[in-house]
Image (cartoon, rainbow, N blue to C red):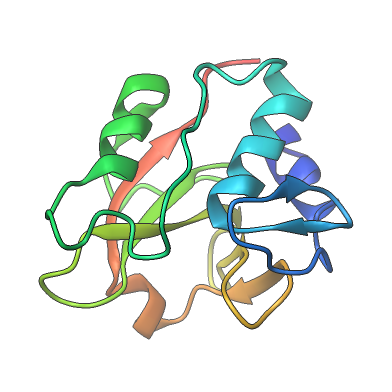
Length: 142
């Protein structure tokens, strides 16, 4: 089993809480990713400053994408593997501001993520979600 998927699955059921990253207490999608990093790789690679729910949309800054490029390895979006970090653009013209961890591939792909109004869940990577993927990354080797 991929260590990033195993770590992400430990967060399932954690309530959504903006800017949090505490398993079983609260997290948002970035907090989930940060928690997986801490469990598998140790200390986070950089300090995460406070961020608003709009993720820099008014300025059009791709802050989440830029941060991912600093610490993860870019992959082709059509080359899924368990443990990949998937970056989503939730609507056309908006910045990419949602992330998840690919759990399963193949005929029934899934990903683990947190989003407002839900706890951390493992969801089907259905066509509506796949259409929103703008980037795919791999974590550093363990």
